[in-house]
Length: 303
Image (tube, rainbow, N blue to C red; front, side, top):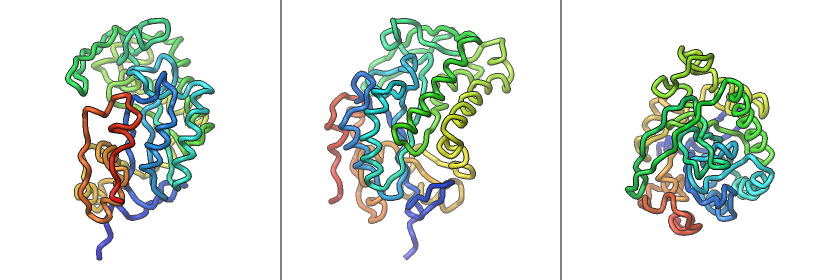
């Protein structure tokens, strides 16, 4: 019988993975007051398997990093202590656990910022309204452009967050550099209208991202930061299923495949892939609610 491509082992730097089914970082908005909760230990450990890789939901690097209610942070000692039992629960299952660190930049509101101040960004240009999961239009506050002198402090927030993640027991960190958040606000010329050393040319627009990477690597080490760990390794994600995921692995397009909604709704996703079982259907209306059980830890297992 031919092996299932997604369930073959893979060596990722110093880490030996038993299979290639990765849990993608998924915002769930159940960290009340930005503090990770005990129900997250249940949620993540349900999805942990020996030799598997999980990436935690996007986690704020500072009090200015927040863009949505009740997303977790990792900038205080309280956050670190709250993460420790969650990480331990994943490790108890024999899985690896990486922390994704982020800063939302201009994708935020006055209410979510310390002292009701304007969100920080590469620009003063605001981001337009976005449709929420339940059909509401979400409005964001006009941002304040960071001065050149202020940028090193934001870079240092990423560094400290990486250190805190390692102190909390995470095996490594992933820097969130996409989806219109602060790093991409510097990278993209549609958002970055600066005329200093952080804007204009491609080299200048990449400067902030590269400074963040350098700071994180120096603090946590290249392997923990995904430098050596991901050297030569590619993780594909976005709409894959068992068949398509297996195909891109077989064809050499990717090494690992990250699953979001499928893993959210199927805590035993690798097992279901193994036996070819039917998948639970996800309930989009519970993706971002605050309930610690419904749509979070109550999706059924095969057995």
